[in-house]
Length: 60
Image (tube, rainbow, N blue to C red; front, side, top):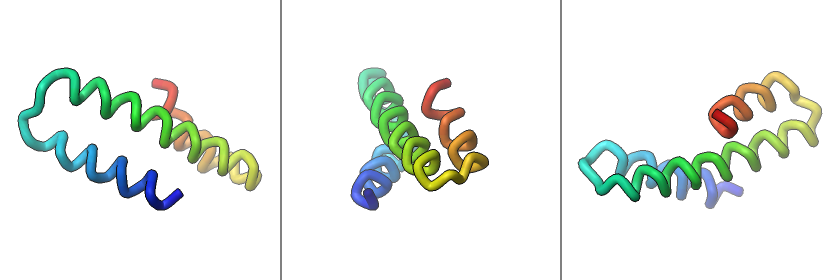
């Protein structure tokens, strides 16, 4: 799971430099998947505050 966090972090850091539009679409998709997985994990742990917090960027 930590690999997913690292991958998302690298993708988001590269958003700080000018990139093609398709890259930003890819970042949105990767972020949606990672935040969705995080939401699911927090629901399984019954930590609803964190589940709601991470579901907002996942499904926005």
